[in-house]
Image (cartoon, rainbow, N blue to C red; front, side, top):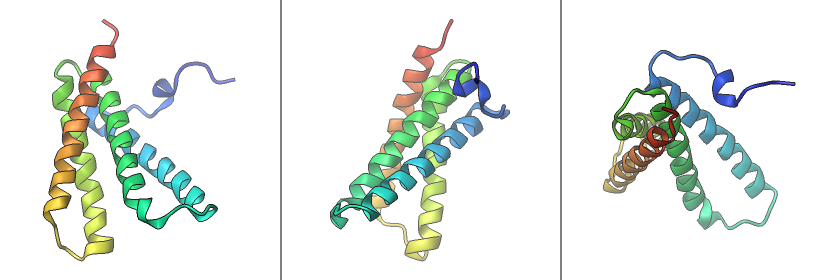
Length: 132
C-alpha cells in the first residue's frame, strides 16, 4: 500500500510554477481522455464539446495553480496567475499549430485572460491552504 499523498509522490521539480504546470497538463490530459471516451460512447451533442473543453481547462488551471501556490513562499496569486498564463500559452501554441494555422482571435485572448484570473484565484486558495 502506498503511504502519503499524491503531492508527495510527484516528482520534485525545481520551480513551483514548473510543478504546477506539470499537474495542470496531467489533469487536462486525463480529463480530456475521460471526456473523449464518454462522448464517443454516448449520444452526447457535438455542440457541447467547446464547453466541456473549456471547463476542463479551468479545472486544470485551478489544480495546477493550487499546487504551485502550496509550494511557493508567499504571493500565491502571482504564482497561480503565472501558472495559468504558462498553461494557456502551451494550450494556445498547440491549438495554433494543430488547428488554426497561426491565427489568433480576440476570443482566444479573452479565454487566456480568464484562465490567468482563474489561475490567480487557484493560487490564492493554495496559499491560504498552506500549513504554517
